[in-house]
Image 1 (tube, rainbow, N blue to C red):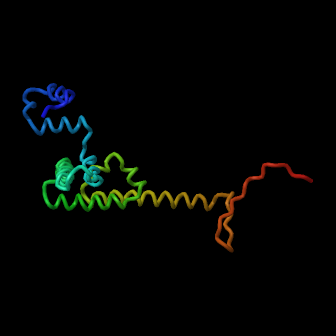
Image 2 (cartoon, helix red, strand yellow):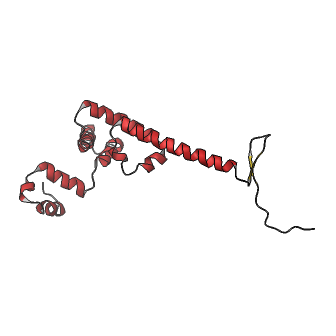
Length: 164
């Protein structure tokens, strides 16, 4: 099997000492094609069986995606694998705003307790902000809370002229 010329050129640029190092070359290629552990996780979770391929081939593909996902995160024990799976479930149930807030580090969370602490801290800070916003609104002179129905009625400031 021949390699495409761009891959051959990429490998040829490496030093002689790294040229025979499989793991090093694999890392270079994964970086070049932007195949991160997160990308392998997505492929593992969303890969579909192609009608031209057998179930055995499909099984081989998703097995490889799974293996690359856990290898990329250095999951090398049952305990770490268990933590990864639990963390993944916590991530799936986290609010979008929290995912967005932790965007830079989201894919590196592999400890459920670390992720839970971060999410609890995030929610605590944001619940304090919501409380402060609500308190400020209570003292806003433009709003009036009616006793009978607990609705907030917003009055627009008068900008016209008075007719006498």
